Amino acid sequence: MPEGHTIHRLAADHQARFGGRPVRVTSPQGKFADGAALVDGQVLREAQAHGKHLFLGFGEAPGFGSGAGSESGSGGGPGAGPGFGWIHVHLGLFGKLGFGAAPAPPPADTVRLRLANAEHYADLRGPTACVLLTDDEKQAIHDRLGPDPLRPGDDPDRAYARISRSRTPLATLLMDQKVVAGVGNVYRAEVLFRHAVDPLLPGRDLPRPLWDALWSDLVALMREGVRTNRIDTVRPWHTPEAMSRPARRDDHGGEVYVYRRTGAPCLLCGTPVRTALLAGRNLFWCSRCQPARAVQ
Image (cartoon, rainbow, N blue to C red; front, top):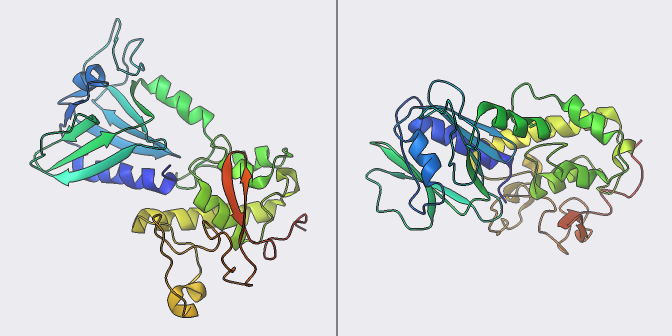
């Protein structure tokens, strides 16, 4: 599943290619045909991201009638107006969103959503969610998500308030989108390693200064991920060039300390990287660099 930096980059890409202009919106697959018809030809006002959720705002006024949030985008109800609202996309495990230059080729029948103008097109395939929302329905999603390190003004105090009251391991809390939005398995493993934090440390034992450092690091790492469209977490003196080591080869594509390096020597101490299943996801860490003790 893409991590939050990917969704923020997708929002910026949509804004750059389609923002401020009318857009053709279709659903070749048909599952979003009614919703697409409501916003087809309208102006893309704004593209936003919050965590792993992408929002594309169309039209010049808020509000669809009841039922606009159904999977098909059908309904509309009294007061519904054409072209006003938000397309909400969650890629999930299998969703793909790609861009191309016009003229767009004939769409495959797997394309849930196509946006197109005279210069560009974008195709969405296999998302967990592709629905049409009112402003209120969109706000309800924001309200249930935690602060996002990539959203200006999001408050890390909200996350720490939940973390500091919880006996749950910090590694689990960082993956809980209600606590911190946008952090996935790579950033979770890497930021804990970078700050020598035991991933199984109960949230309530995390000192506030260390949380501030973790948050600041997530902001910096994820901003760089948006810029480069990949996740690199090693410090300059731990790059392959600096350490005279082979570059990492992995389909996620970046230089990391522990993620997917099970059994390989830690780049800092040589201890084999460990892995374990935690809350249904693989956890990666170095038992020497991240000792199992409360942080002082």
